[in-house]
Image (cartoon, one colour):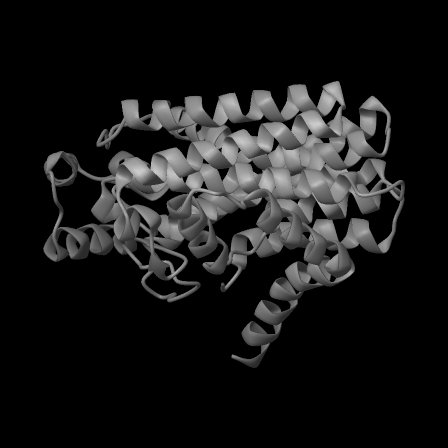
Amino acid sequence: MGTVVQLKKQINNSYFQLKDSVEDKLILVEEKIKLKLESNVDLVQKMTDYHIKTGGKRLRALLTLGSAKLCGYNKGTRDINLAACVELIHSATLMHDDVIDNGSIRRGKETLNKIWDNHSSVLVGDYLLSRCFEMMVEDGNIEVLKLLSSTSSKIAQGEVLQLQHKGEVDMLEETYLKIISSKTAELFAASTKVGAILSDMKAKEKEALEFYGRNLGLTFQIADDTLDYNSELKLFGKKIGQDFYEGKITLPIIILFQRGNTEQRVNMKKIFSKKKRDENDFSYTLSLIKQYEIIKECYQKAHHYINLASNSLSVFKDCKEKTILANLTSFSLSRDF
C-alpha cells in the first residue's frame, strides 16, 4: 500500500512541480483573467466572479507557461496574456458544455446554468470568447491568432459532433476519438504550441510541442471519461456516474458494447435510449464493466498516447522543464484530484 501511495504522490508532484516552476506568472494570469472579465453589467460580473471562485487546475494555462519556459521565452508578458486567453477559451467551453449536457455540478459546485439559467450561461460563455479574441488581437501575432481562432472553431465542431451521436452506444471508437480530439486535445495542443510560437522556435519544436499537447489531451480525456465508471476511486469533485446519467457515450461504454453479448447490447441500447437513467441502470452497467475489465482496457489505450506525448519531447535538450512536462503525462492518466 505504501508503494502505491508513494507512486500517487510522485505522479501528482509532476503537476505541482509545473505549477511551482511558473508560480509567479500563474498569479499574474489569474489577475489578467479577473481584469478581463470585469463588466458593467451586474449579472455578467456576478456570474464571472462565481466562475473564478470555482477554481480549477489551470492546466492549459500552465502548459502555455511551461512550454514557453522550455523554449526559453523571456521577452515580456505575452506568455501570461496568452495563458489567460487559452484558460478563458476553456472556461467558455465548460459553460456551453454544461448547458448542452444539462449539467448541475462542476468541480464539486453548482454550475452557472443551475444557479442562473441556460440563456445567461450561453451568453456569458460567448462574452468570455469575445474577451479571448480581444486578447489575441492585442497580442498581434498572426500565427497565434490563426491557431487559437482555428482551435475555437474545432472545439465547437467537436461539440456538434458529440451532439450528433448522443445516445449511440454503437458509436465507432474512431468517432469518439474525433470528438475528444476536437473538444479537448485541440486546446491542449494549442496551449503548448503557443509557448513555442512566442519563443520564435523553428517548425520542428513547434510541431513537437503541438504533438505533445494533443496526445496529452487525449490521455487526459480518456482518463476523465474512464473515471466516471471507476467506482474504486472517489476524487476531485467529479461524481461517479455523472457522464452516464447525462447520457454521454464515452470510451468505456463503446468498448463495453463491443465486448458484450447480444442480450447485453440490447440492454445497453435500451438504457441509453431513455430520457433518464436510474441507479439500477448504472449498477447493471458497472457490473458489466467489471466483468469485461473495461477500465483496464481504457487505461491501456490511454498509455499509447502517453508514450507518443513523452517521445515527442525528444527534440528538446534535457532540462528541468522537459522532465516536468514528460512526467505530466502520467499525471494526466493517474491523477487523484
